[in-house]
Length: 503
Ligand code: HEM
Image (cartoon, rainbow, N blue to C red; front, side):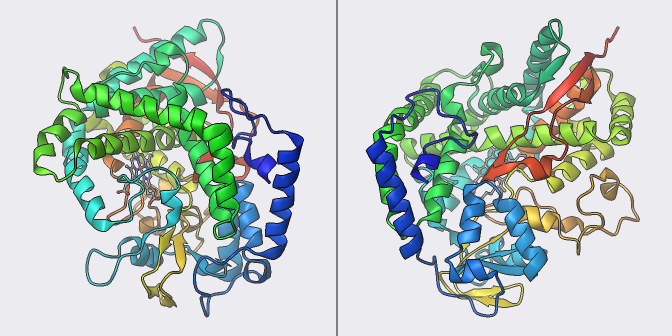
């Protein structure tokens, strides 16, 4: 386990500071792991009565689910649990998952009216220090949302559409340059660099230039690793393993990569806080409001860092998924291109206002997010002692709504595994649209939902307008072949591209 855990989610060793594990450390690690497996893995909360679950999860401390988490199969595993046990399934003695709209509203919409909130679990604390994403304290969280939220409204985001378009044109220049040498490209890294450049430029007013550089900075790529470690640690909570892992991480990795990444991120943000800004980016807006906030500047800087980081992989995941699903469905592809060409002639004249009104463009985006939500599990919460879709969940129990399972729930969708954008455009569709919530709901829903939507609308409209593309990747079923640690590890998005020539 320790050996496995020292590898990255992608199965590769980190490029910087590869951990040197001597044989004794490995043997001790393996022995420790076996002891822990056989002796104890404490349940996270009280045993939930009346909620079904598998034998191994109930009597072997959730071992099947733990294995699913460690092997990156948690989203699929939770979905399978719901298929076997219904709308609320226990996956360990004190932990349960749900897959219904009512449960989603009960859990994530709580705390706004009467009744106590389902707060974020300790899992978030192991990700990083306190910020808008990790905080469980509602008072602190509200003050951060109050400060940043007004800059993320749909009206406010449209003021940044021009910057997003400039980033897209830069992406296309890079793609076209590459096409001069080879007509087959892997888009994952390019779209990742595009997401990093766009998020940081809109948020901080600073182009990071990842695309120009040809690769992301190491500090932008830390999130999957952080989530991977947090996932591994979370599986052994209460067993003593997290302390050993913490020590190993400090000893071999954290001191090097994680601390360097945090320093690099904070340096960038602190520099931008002092630098002159040439347009009204989000940092300018937030700092204008900062005087009315009770948050000190270091907290504001930490939150800029958290918000920025939360946008990189999620957006790349979503862009790649939409391109994959569209290209593997030729009719949808043709229909989308027809719609786009009826209003725009090339990437240069796309507009946010028009793109957000295009029914088929928005249908392919929503349908891809249904099938492949970038945050497939929704996020674990602690019950304050409340009913969830008719079942009493005792205080202290961990519970979540699996977005992947809800988005594939056959009670809500006909042909739930099929990519059918028409379900969002046909008035006769009987699918339950409310059951697609890739940004979650309630006070902890994605703060940048409209920013993300705008980036997707513009980037995808521009891509399908400027390039004739064909998917030539190896993986034939993205959903089945993806692993997830909080968000997905994407398969290779290999495409054959042809630039459409515009006079
Ligand atoms: C398609 C793209 C995106 C999707 C599907 C998405 C989805 C989500 C989801 C499901 C959550 C809740 C996670 C949880 O509670 O564990 C979340 C939270 C969050 N997202 Fe996004 N996100 C996207 C893009 C972005 C972008 C572009 C940014 C920033 C620029 C961002 C910033 C955040 C932040 C800061 C939170 C924490 C909010 C809070 O707890 O108040 N996201 N997102």
